[in-house]
Length: 204
Image 1 (spheres, rainbow, N blue to C red):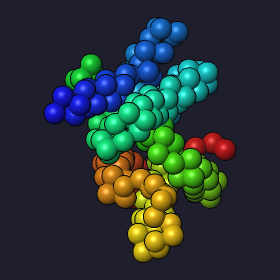
Image 2: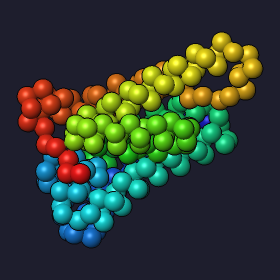
Image 3: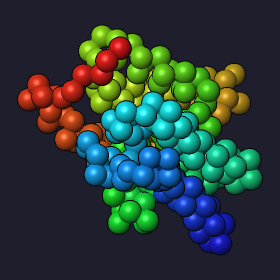
């Protein structure tokens, strides 16, 4: 019980660090919550006009998802799913910001990187491909997270049916499905904009 509380605590705290807000406040004096969509993620930080702050936010949001999950995988592997979900929820619902956080894509990327470099590359490849075709960041994020879930589910099915591959450790597909649902939830406004054809396209 103590281990569960400890893992949930450090995972949530790591995920809840609002790097987008911290960086914009520190280096520009602006409150990112009053800019653009009000989101604390890298995409909205980019709307301040500072690419370096946006890049820094992206990297730090990835790291804050990666570190706690990696630590858990080393010392408490039986609770890896708990760490994954808790760090993600920390970003989505940070206690410091009245539980109003970001959309979680960068933190999600950090989490799956800690789970599997292959899934990380799959997400990035899918995101870039969809972005080049449709030029919508939100659509790319949702489609890429869905692709990661589907491909992992197929791999999981193959491994479970092949004794010779049983030594391969794969992420839990249920966890990845939960991430996909949560990403759909955080992008619900973007889905409506896509439906109404009012979603902003990214410049590539």
